[in-house]
Image (cartoon, rainbow, N blue to C red; front, top):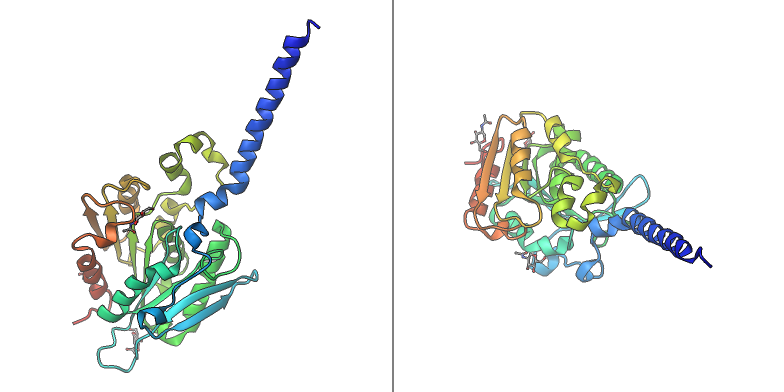
Length: 294
Ligand SMILES: *[C@@H]1O[C@H](CO)[C@@H](O)[C@H](O)[C@H]1NC(C)=O
Ligand SMILES: *[C@@H]1O[C@H](CO)[C@@H](O)[C@H](O)[C@H]1NC(C)=O
Ligand SMILES: *[C@@H]1O[C@H](CO)[C@@H](O)[C@H](O)[C@H]1NC(C)=O
């Protein structure tokens, strides 16, 4: 009888720790769906195609070495036309939505700026099979770069990687590992690493960030990129998701002999692209990629 309070203390301790352990296991196990919310707003159910924007394209279906199938769109210009730019923009998507949401941007880059465009869905996104993870997305990037290397027109063109947020992390991975295929990099509102950005996005998970197995160590990748590759940094100074200091630090860490910093006062994480001058900076950078356009 007299043991009762002690019994309750013990039992609540056991329950308390069980709940805590379960919560930690939950965070560990389900962080993928937090970090890669690929199914939000029906983004897995329907993906717009370039045809819906009046664009001719090749629908890509690329097999990864671990059995996934990646969907992508390739838009090529006629390489024999007199105004052929011989440049390709490869778009690396952020972590929400799908490649269909990028089609207005694809259309602009393809039709107005006249560059070839390549865009694909990471595994577990859009119409690609599988479940997203850092390991998986890197295999996907390897798969796409093998495809680029095997495709004569793409491999001969000057390839510029263009990535926002998570797409910036994939961009830096590709540039560090396939530098010989990369002519330039455009980074927008990306982070130093997932662990360093967690306290800002999910303050309550801050104490557990060591449990985060999705790392995306962009701060390490950026220093591995050859200094000959030009990089354009576009940073929203009011970014509410990734603190702008992350972009600034990436800029400072970059060894590129040709790096350009463009900051947008009043811009947020996902509205930088609609700021005045954004496309002027984009085009100015692209135009100067070797060989320089007239
Ligand atoms: C594109 O540029 C590469 C490298 O400068 C060159 O080898 C290739 O012939 C060019 N292709 C076209 C169609 O101009
Ligand atoms: C930015 O994201 C918010 C919510 O995530 C959304 O409501 C808004 O339309 C987005 N803005 C742009 C320009 O994409
Ligand atoms: C650096 O990049 C700028 C803009 O892209 C370009 O005008 C310039 O020629 C480049 N300089 C070198 C040394 O590559």
